[in-house]
Amino acid sequence: MEEAATVELADRLLAELPALLAPGDVADAAEELSGLIERGRAGEPVEEEFLDVLHRHPALRRRAAELAGSESDLGVQPPPGPGRAPMPPRYVCPQDGYEWFHLDLSEPVPTCPNDGVALVLDHEGGTGP
Image 1: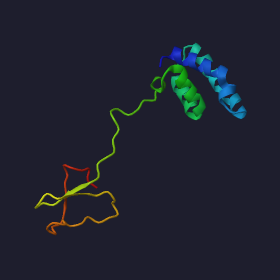
Image 2 (image 1 turned 90 degrees about the vertical axis):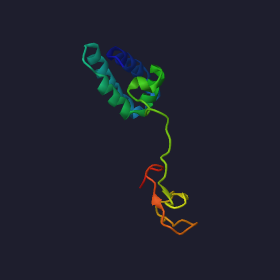
Image 3 (image 1 turned 45 degrees about the horizontal axis):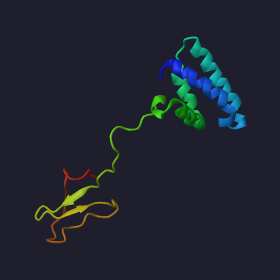
């Protein structure tokens, strides 16, 4: 976010503080935002401090996201790529290819039910312990 946009957003939030925060928090937040606005208009960088204020006041962060259009404009970005659960460790029988997934790590790794051979960790098919 550019410094001018930060100052503008801080100014808009300042006007809405009584509706966004508990009465006991309004004075402190107003003082913080007023100082940021004043210093930002004087050309000082204030974005980091502004983000700190938003971090301390979740209601301001939510409203700022609404006003800015999205949270990514406020330095908050989702992790890249689609999320997915990690695969559990996969064990296989070296003789017949039987596979078993270790879903509960408190459970011991069994032997192959087909031939009684100890299962081995498949480093290619699972994440491993």
